[in-house]
Image (cartoon, rainbow, N blue to C red; front, side, top):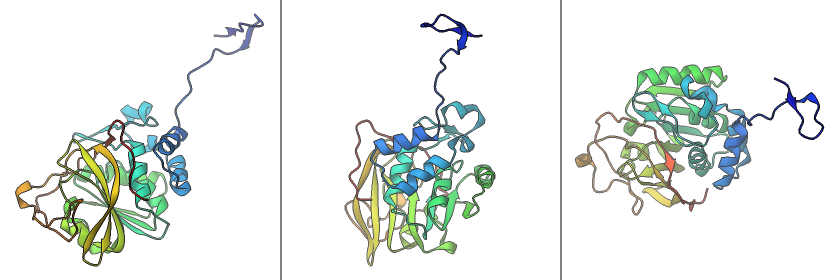
Length: 267
C-alpha cells in the first residue's frame, strides 16, 4: 500500500519505512567490537554467507551474533567468538589446519578461505555429509571432512600448523598436541563444560607452551572419561604432551562469550 509522506502530504510519493535486514556485515561489525582486526579474516566473514550454514528454520537468525541450534542437541558457536578463536591462530594462507567439531561448516569455510587446507573431524556422519554439501555449494574444495573421535585428531594428515577445538575439555588431548608441528598454535576452551577459558598455546620442543587466554566463554563438553586423563595432560598452567581416553568424543559444538569477557591473548 502506498504511504502518505508526513511532510508533503502527497499519497504514493514514498514507501513506508521497513526494518533493515541483517547481513554478513553485521557479523563483521560484531567481530570488530570484540577486537578482531585481521583484514583477511574480516573479509572472509564478509564473503562467507552464514545463512548457507544454518538449518532452514533459523535463517532469520543467521546474521545475528548468537548461537544457532543444530541436530543431535548441538548448537553453533557464536560468530564473534568464532572470529576471536580463528584470529588467535594467526593464519597467513599457507597452513594446514585441524578443526575439531565441524557442525554445519561455517567456521570450516572461514578456515578454508584463510589457510591452504583444512581437516575437520566431526562425530556425527550425517552432519559431516550436511557440511560437505554446504561447503561444496560455496565452491570450497580445500576442506576434508572426516567422521570420527575429535580427541584423536587425524594423524594421517599431520603435522598441522594450527589446531582449533570447538568444545570444552579439562585439558588438551595428547593426540592433538602430538599432531601439532613445533611452532604451531592451538586454541581450545579449557574447562569441564559450561564455563571455560578459551586458551591459546604454542607447540614447543618439549610440549605446549601457554601463550594466553583469549576470552571467557560457555561451551558444551567434548566428552571423554575424566578418570582416563593423565596427570601430565596439557593444562593452562603447564606444558608437555599428555594423554586422554579413547571413548568416541561427542563434539557438541556450542560456544557463547561470557558477559563482560575480554580478550587477553596475543594473536
